[in-house]
Length: 292
Image (cartoon, rainbow, N blue to C red; front, side, top):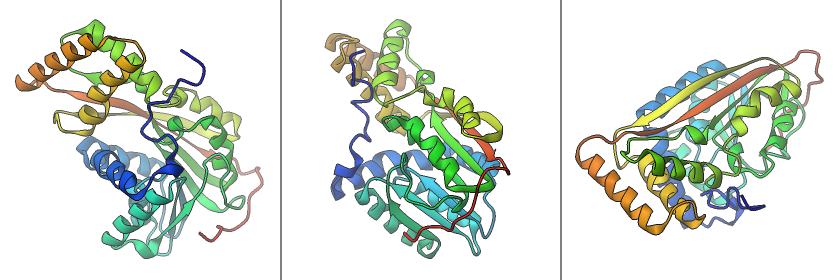
């Protein structure tokens, strides 16, 4: 792979450049669409149970996008708590603010523009911090780990939920060609599709204790769902652009996929890992949440 090539087809590259139209399209066709799928709803409920945000707590959602997870956090920390959603895209934050207002959660959420690798908050400002399918899209995403730990109080919790790109699942009769497409999509649709595999070690090195891992598989049978429209056929296009397959092979692969769909055999999905732990009680803590 050429230097600097990895991740160049990520939908989330250069988020600060998103205008209102781009942000709304990504929110509707990717973030909110994925967030409504049955497996995603169940997974989100389960990993938030593991993170255990409680009423009255202050919780940070890093890389919040349109606020799917932030809204659920706000519901869990009510009454008296506060959810803060941070994202580098002010345009996405505007969409998130609208959706929070529609859900009746505007007073329980604050939005803040910022970078996961240099969080604009005091040390120990939160009871818990979370990053969901965000770090894999960020260059040097590992740098966000000590920042997440820094802004959580002693005894607080940190959780990271992210995709394992090589685990992409799609029902297709051509195994060899599908494997080439999955490898290309894995390497080029995110900056680091294997970051989640290193996170247990990274969290321990950052001083967390009781670090654990749980896997979640999101599976769809709807060919109009997120994993078909935003991964399957898009990854085939990426594979052509990086030279992993030819245009003729892409057309063949898409035709066979359409045949599979017509026969009622469509299945697609991806495995995600949730890695979480606790900031050790002997680490320095303190500070209050910075005003958004």
